[in-house]
Image (cartoon, rainbow, N blue to C red):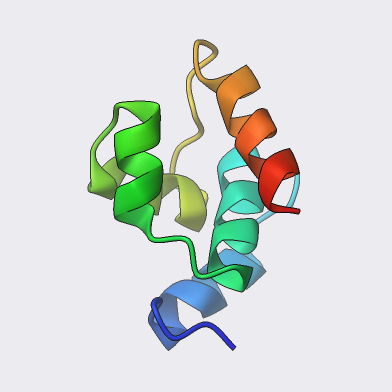
Length: 76
C-alpha cells in the first residue's frame, strides 16, 4: 500500500478513466511510491500539473506523451 499519497488522491485516481494517460501514470506512480515531485522534475512540469494528470483533470501534452509512456513502461 502506498504511503506517499493521500487516500483521497488514490480514490480520485481509481475513479478516473484509465483511458487517460495521466491517470495511468498516476496509478503506476502510486503503486510504486514514485513521488509526484520526481515525476514533475523528470518531465519539466510543476508538481501541481502532475497531480492534475493523476486526477484526470488534464493530460500530458503531445510533446510529453512518449516520455510519459516510457516512464510508465519502466515502472511497470
